[in-house]
Length: 362
Image 1 (cartoon, rainbow, N blue to C red):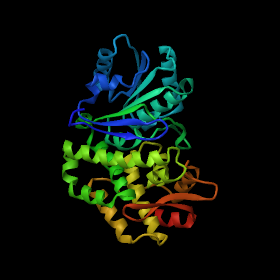
Image 2 (image 1 turned 180 degrees about the vertical axis):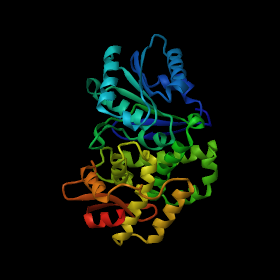
Image 3 (image 1 turned 90 degrees about the vertical axis):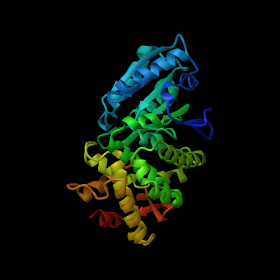
Image 4 (image 1 turned 30 degrees about the horizontal axis):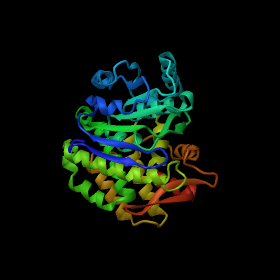
């Protein structure tokens, strides 16, 4: 493997590799290594397809002559992560005549990865999926770990399945065309890993903020690799989110409520996570678990990366609380959040009083 590429393994019952580097979408042999049969469905969206879909198809066909390939293109955006579009992906697999050794290639951000992975999980009770993330957020979060889902009007990611990919290929060259807003959104998830597991990583992010925002490829590759190492370690220990993996949801209970309340048309996921992490740190302080200055430092760092740190106007705290009660991370014994004791030391907060949540939302 080229010295410019990085690879790490996600261990578990079905181990797989994450490969990070520039030019992977044109690397036919690496792409083709995920194929066990002669059929492939490329799932992407109408923003990404004009940029990279032909390149991926050409590389796959050159590497695997005789490959039968089809393409399913979603409208870009969270509003497409629906049961209707999921059904469209299944229809595309049916039209392809996909057999059990077929493979779905998910080319795009988290919406594409989640929906394509879910379609792969359900077709014939599970076929292979190769994740080809093209956003920073997808590279460090949704493409790794095998959580797939679609949204309902009542909440985000309520219908889904655990379905580990066969491989993840994160082509950092795609970040050159990533809109500025999406780059910053991905950096929110990068910051999350420092917040929950690695205080020294927060120091590194503070020192390298300018390079990351300027899209320095060395800095971005380092941030992606360190984030993926943290997620891979957690997923290997807890593949089905029965324990430690829940820590990855730091800020997400608040974030998903915000996204749902805005009809998936306001803050994007990374922006909502940034606000959610500030609220989670504030909740930890309100409950007497963490010093207020830790949350203030986190808020300052997120602001330095141009991320929102305040609850958007017009969202009623009572409505957000109701949505959090339906969140898939809730339990029968009450509201459940991920908080922290200090940077790098996250913990599960069970049976959190509604009054405490309303206090930080107000």
